[in-house]
Image (cartoon, rainbow, N blue to C red):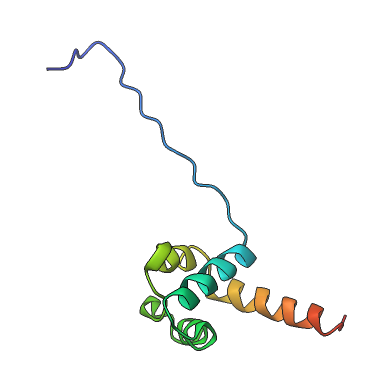
Length: 87
């Protein structure tokens, strides 16, 4: 039985912040390793919101659900625009 006069300590581990770009890279790599077409699967997820389009391998599904789908689209579009030299 615990002593009621003592204060208990509880420590919450702070999750490491990860960029949207890193999320996309990790999800892409996990999908590729599992033999999926990552472009098709990521598009399916973005369009439908159904996380089952993303493999749970290496925590990819949990990871992709930590960012909003519009953030994924924004990052992909910014990267595409940069890659084509458009301003």
